[in-house]
Length: 336
Length: 284
Image (cartoon, rainbow over all chains, first blue to last red):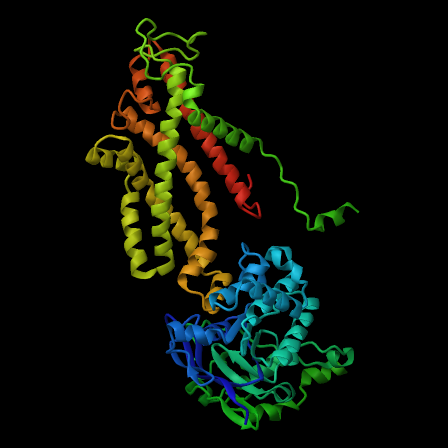
């Protein structure tokens, strides 16, 4: 089996009474890309920041190459940070507007006292070239670039220390759709070239599909489904995953016309007042269809393996698959 | 056709702001007066001439003379040295002390922040002239004490503005990104936070220099500041006040000098704010 690079065990992040991340566990193998999907407020970003120890987790374990990050501090944490880097959502805010591109890219090398001035400059030029920019842009400021170009700069900055793990927190969400594909393709290219492991966060299943080997779906701070990519998109087991997938448009008019959309009822509950038992219960179409079974309100469903390479946190994950192939009345009516 | 030009990356030409020109122009003039006072002033500011006391403005004495026959123009020109010297030194000190305390409070937060800011609040709860007055009373009159008094009275304001800037900047993504990179607190504070704090502080400081000049004048007017015979605008005001009916120009010209100086500093501060705000959000 391939080596595990990142292991997250029962990670919980609390802000006051609210658990932004609740008992999240997953592993990432070397060279693998795990997509982490969920709507705003589902805890994706909080989880990523807790993994990198930007905000310390309230409880749980994070192991990077077997080393415990939560208890690491000072010099040992700094040394580990060199090997894992982050790409942020909006490059215009993650790049200091008062520094030139050259200074921004050089800064990680300065922090870790790598090389002398000349060799650092050479490395900066090399990185700019690697992400598809002219090394001459080093003397310019971030606001002189388009969003896509700025994200390339941010990626170059994250990669200049030659990290093993990249956590990309919605790296394309702030970009135009036409640019999104370019940045994703760049990340795919660099991942292969530099043998990177990646945690790729997005709120859009379509974006994650192209880049991920496995996908984790988060809802209200918990992972509700974690599966191999093809498995998750082909046979989603959790009713929430199904609802998300049904919202993705299909680029084929014939299929699109027959696409059945699962509209979730109600609002995302306030994280301060979660429903008892399963957090998805209040909006779950399956819960309603099954006549509101008692167990859903009593116990939080654990994330259990329901098939090889697929785990879901639903008491009735089996029923979902069964139901999946049953066309509904409304669809019949639409087709007629 | 014309619209395509708008998207060109070339910076739009800045509008020339008349008020800014006026502000900086006046300031430059006053700075020259202050620097070259001995060469510009037509008379020795402290030379008394009892044959020409309380004279109205004339060709010999453009702005008249005071009760001991000293040339008002020369005294006003030398007065800029005191005004600027005290204004800039006191505010410089206030920025340094207040800025440092604000940085520490905003960056560390928690108990340190709480401790520093409560002391600042206590200082801020006194009107600044009153606070300066108290400090002057305790330390005795003189140039050094007046500088200390004004610096201490203005320090809390700079601590506050710095702290509030630090609090917003420290949460911005580029600071978080630098922390994730493994940078230490000193690098984060001085390379990434301080450059974003200086703008608002510089604007505030420029305006506060004018305020400090007013405070110095007020203290000297009350007899607590600069002691005679040194040419201080406040002391000259007080002096002119005694001869208000016989020689109103004494107070009038002194008041005008103070007014123009404070106006110049305020206009310069406004212009600086417009200039430093890259998106021009606070444009009038």
